[in-house]
Image (cartoon, rainbow, N blue to C red; front, side):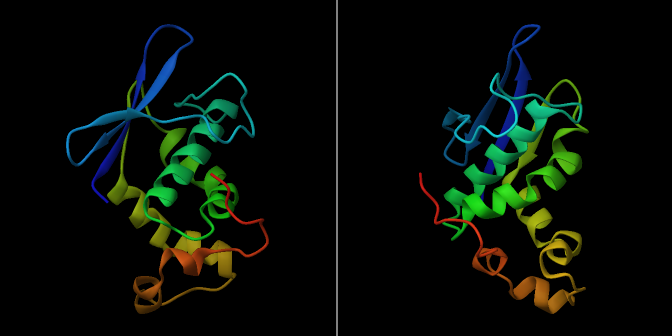
Length: 141
């Protein structure tokens, strides 16, 4: 998916994440799922703001790709995603849809879900629905 998430510092305590779409439109990432940080997003460290950013970025991406179980997948994977992309970012954050897709297909993520190593062919054949954990309630927008 041709989409990029950009994070920018807009003051000492204000960090904003925008979404640049393929058609050039820019929207903002909403803090729909509040699990760790009631005060908003953050990046560049491993705290609650980065955890909620990872959760909401994954959820947004998975919803846009019409992934069954998007909420459940985001809830189960956001901490690993945080350490892979969000906590390691510097002053500005940039994560592409392609990076997220590749990360989701990565063997280390799938291994956590399945408990087994997978072949490259198995990884390539998985769809987002294949990641669905099945133990969360249905997604609600």
